[in-house]
Amino acid sequence: MELRDLRSFMAVAEELSFTRAALRLKIAQPPLSQRIQQFEREVGTPLFARTKRRVALTDAGRTLLPLARQILNASDAALHAVRMVGTGHGGKVTLGAFYSAIYTVLPEIIRPFAAEYPEVDIQIREMVVTQQLKALRDGSIDIGVVRLAHVPPDLKVLDLVEETLMVALHVDHPLAGKAAIPLRALVAEPLITLDPDVNSEFHLATRAAFDRHGLAPTIARQAIDMHLVLGLVSAGLGVALVPSSLAKITHKYIVFRRIKEPTAPMTIRLAWLSDAVAPLVPRFVDAARKTFYRDSKALARGSTLANSSRE
Image (cartoon, rainbow, N blue to C red; front, side, top):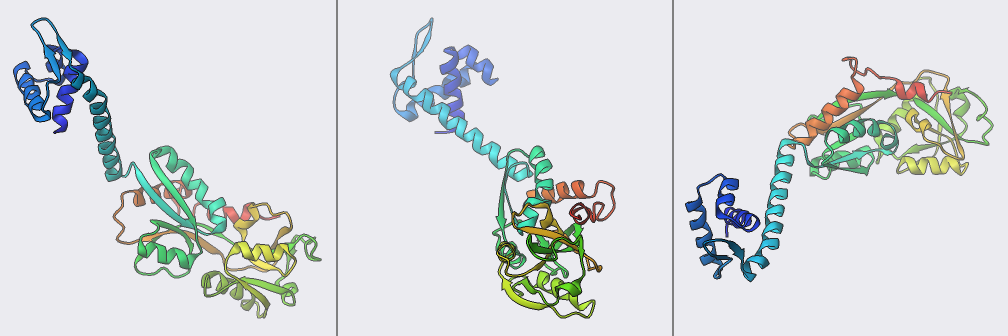
C-alpha cells in the first residue's frame, strides 16, 4: 500500500466522481481508474460500487476512508515535523543554565526566540557550570549559560552581560542597613562560598575579591549550589558574595548590598560545542546576539544586571 494509492482513493471517495477526482489530482481519468482498480486488487475487495450514473463507496470503502485520512494526516504531520527540524524551525533545543540566569538572562533570549520559532520545544535544565560542560559534551544539552574565565578549545561562546559581586546578608544582620559594605568588614564574618569542586570559577572569583585587597576571609561553609548558599544566608549562618543578577530575585530573609571596593566583573556567556551541527544552535545564538548586541557593540548591555541591582 502506497501513500499515492491512499490519496487517489480519498479523492474518489470524497468527490464520488472519477472525473472530478482526476481534476483534483491533476492527472488523466484513465490512469486514475487503473490505479484504483490495482489498489482494490491489492486490498482484496472492491472499494467502490460503479454504475454508468454514479460512484458509491462499498462497506469496505466506507471502513477505509477514516483510516486513510488518519494515515495521510499522520504522514503529512511527520513530513512537516522533519522539514521543520531539518531547517531549524522546529524540533527541540535543550538549554543548561545556572540558577540566577534562569530568571534574568535566559528569559530575555527565550521570549523573542519562541516568538520567531513557535514550533520549537524549549527545554531548560538548572545546572552548575561543571555540570553544563559535561552535558554539552555528552549531548544532554545543546547550549549552556555559563561563567567561564577560560574557554575550553572545544567550545564556542557568545558574551552576553557582565555582572559584579554583591554581598548577601540576612535582613537582621548588623551590616544590612548599609548601602555599601567594605570587604574588610566581612573578613571576620562566616563566609559561605560555592564548593570549588562543583563551581571553581565562582569560588575563585570570591577568593580573588578578597585577595585583590590583601584580605583573608573566614570561609565557614561551602555549598554545592547557589540555592544552598542562599538557604544558609537565610538561616543566618553566614554571609556570601553572590552575582549581582541574584539581587533581581526577591528573597524574604535576604538583602543584597554593594561592595565598596571594586571587584573584577564576571561575564555571562552562551556556550556550545564548536562542531555542533543542530540547526537550532546557531538560530538560538543569533537570537541572543540580537537581544544583547542591539548596538552592534560587544557587551552592548554590559553592566545592565549590575547597575539595575544596585541600591
